[in-house]
Every structure is written in structure tokens, then in C-alpha cells.
Image 1 (tube, rainbow, N blue to C red):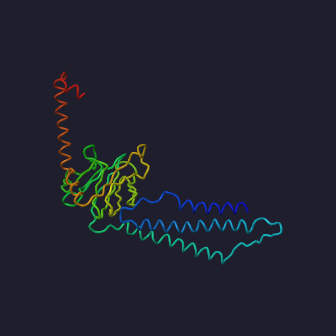
Image 2: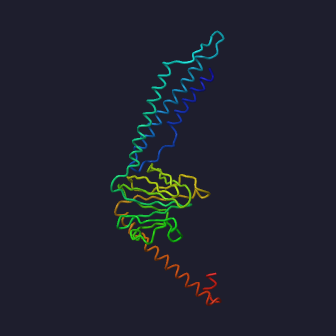
Length: 292
């Protein structure tokens, strides 16, 4: 009797907690509302089964509680019950699986005309690369990655010279324009996730993964690494800013191209070497003290 009452109270408490709890989805800011719908369907199916099983257990505990005058009945199988369970389970799986398959098909099918942006993950920051005026991202190689060329863009590839490289964790994207994010990692597993966009994807060293979405609300959003990636994992945050198209174009025009970045890096290196040589030639002067 007490067990049955406890099970009923647990069931009621669970339902009440769900209705009054403050932890809900963040307001959606992309086209992926269907993902929310899929999660809702899964919740209602599994929630219904959870409540039904607990209440059935409570009823059985009360109905078939110990009675010295009752004799047990040996029933090794029950065809009717088995068919009911098979049918209900099949219906439940179909209801949960079908929306997920539809959502996944849309998730991996990138619309024509979607802009491509490369997202580079590294311990513990983000970087971004946009194609230049030619609309094509240049070739890359891990062998070319260094402090000046963090993306490993091939300097011999003419298509990469006008690529816009952003070695910073702030990304701007235009409103209501589909975008395909291409993910690369220079070290370990990472995961790029903006809760308001719903989409997320693992970033795997040695391969390129992707997802696409269409931003639907102007605003500033946190980009989180959702894969444990080392001691600085908690620091790996970025910012995604959704702008109106004119504001986005103005921001993009201010960003350096790969060609410009490499020239500036070479100029800085030459200036450094010049100071170093000057310091070595006159070890007693102030430049020498500053260099060493």
C-alpha cells in the first residue's frame, strides 16, 4: 500500500516539477524550429510511457499485494499481451523516429546559394574564414599552419589570396541568409554550438564537418565549445553577431584578407629582424636592452 502511494506521489511530483520548472529552451533565432518540434514529440511520447508505467506499477503493487488466501498462477506466456506490447512499442518508435529522420534530412541538405564560412577550432579559441570576391575558399594544408597562417591557407593558391581571415572569436553573419559552416580542428575534438540556433556539430581533426542554418533574429549570441577539449575548455567561448545585411557587409569590408595579413606579418618580421641586427651591432644601446 505504502509503495503504491509513493509511486503515485512520485508521478504527480514529476509532472508538477515539469510544469513549474524555469529551465526551458532559449528563444529560437534560426530556421530550426523543427528540431524543437521533434524534441517535443519525443518528450510527450516518453513522458506518457513514463507516467503509464509508474501508475501501472502502483496499481499492480496495490491490486496484487500480499494476501495469504491468494494462490499464484503460473503463466509463462500471454500472446494477447505480447501483441499489444509489440504494437504499442512499434507505434511509439515510429512516432519518435519519423520526425527525427525528416529533421536530419533537412539538416544535411544544404540549400543552393548558401554562403560558406569556415570555422577553425583550436585550444581554446575560434577563428573564421570567409571566401573573397571570387566566392571560393582557397586550399589549405595542416603543414602550412603557423602563428602567422593559422588556417594553413596555401599561399600559392590564387583563390585563397582574397579570403577574409579572422583570427578572433567574434563572428558576424547576415540576417535571413542561409549559411553553411565548415568546421576544422587543429588539435583535438571540439563542438560548435549556439543554443539559440539549435544546430551543433562535432569538429574532428583531419576531416571537415558542417551544418547549415538561417539566422532569423538580429542579436548577439554566445558560441560554446560543447566537447571537452582540455584544461581550458571552459574558456572556449565565442560570439556570433547577427547583423542586417548592410551592417554585415560594412563589417566584412573592414576585415583583412589573407594576402594583406601575410604581408603585414612579413613586414613585422622584417622590422623585428632589423631591430635585432641593430641591437647586435651596438650591444650597449637601448635597442639591445629592449630586444634581449
